Length: 344
Image (spheres, rainbow, N blue to C red):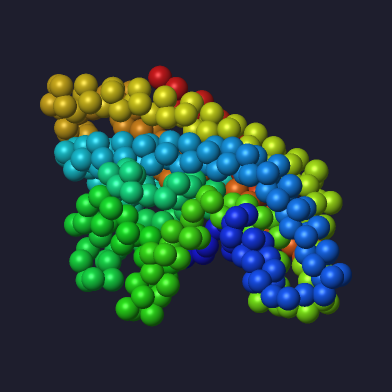
């Protein structure tokens, strides 16, 4: 599974400070000491200024991730009623296409896995590192991570685990498998998803890590230049973070709007299938059939748009990747068009 590019290799507190710690522990020339002192002072100013903005972006992604998980968790009812409807195979769930885009056909197995996955993460939420859920949302992995919802490294089915045990198993799979199986384990799974890493590591794409353990004056100068380049880029970085925040909030607003429509469909379905105990597709009115089809269409829409990856990989010379505008705008348009069709 691809690791979200927006999550950097290292965080503000560990990346540059760790490099400086290695260098400053040795005897250096006066020039090297002066350069190092200035670089560290600049680094601290950057961290003091940037950390609150990064924390705000993390929080927005976390909120988005929780909204996505709660929506997916509500699919349990849809999964259950699909098994209650008689002549269910007569329902037309082909791929939906309109205005140049398409929504994949309804897959009952995928929907069942998704709500199980969401329920598992929500159940173990208290044991998940801050930023993990936001990392899933930011990388478009909340839905895509279902592919990891298989078997833990212990051989046990993840679906049979609960709470933090299940969360740990999922994180291990996102880290490439358990340590015993040759993967990086849950530590990497947590590391690549954790929003704490949405810091200097994001902005410099791990560039300063090159200097870890270096000692001579030339290498300290490179470190100094690295820090200064980040300082020069701060206005652009602040602007990009503001754009990310605005985009995430707008996306979440539209997702909640569609979810309010979806909830009305679910309540209407409960009345027909649960309260009135009518389960024969062939006996439904045309309006009731449309209600069912639109409800399943909304499920497919949620799964599709929650696979959007928000940030593109930084290109050569970039400190932070561009917003994935094309995919984001397409997802927003899908939500607007399909929700308009499904209003009841």
